Image 1 (cartoon, rainbow, N blue to C red):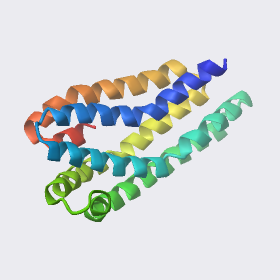
Image 2 (tube, rainbow, N blue to C red):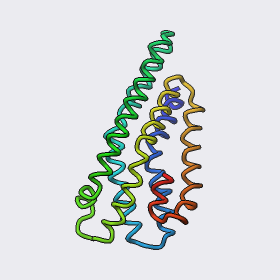
Image 3 (cartoon, rainbow, N blue to C red):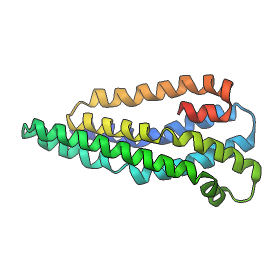
Image 4 (cartoon, rainbow, N blue to C red):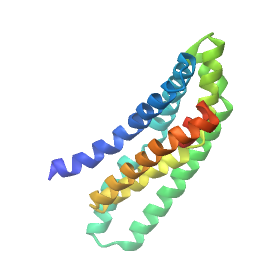
Length: 184
């Protein structure tokens, strides 16, 4: 029973690094080490913002399970609604902060290499648009886990990864490095 609970939880936490690996693969196909270094640096900054703002999924899963077991439908719905609103607000605010401070953040991480800095800033700015969606995906995954609906939870993450894998090469062809960030 513990393994049944641990498997989807582990999958949820490895999804962000998997997106990074898929993006790294496609960026490497662009052929520029500078773009690859820039995307890697931008993705690390994105990951820090994700880790700092993705605390709700760990909290909501057991609470949804508890409320559902007590058959408190109204409280469950209220908790889910509040969590989605809070996650959306955190995502938008964090995305905005990441976007407007991307140059400063990249300067801290990358240093003085102007070419890599430019690639990292471009990647990070476009990737930052996705933070609200990534956080919401993680929250919905946790809500399904709270209802003990592991199949839907895993299905959400697998489908989002397939969408990323399909869109990456297509967007990359038309938009270059920023296309990979947009697809993610």
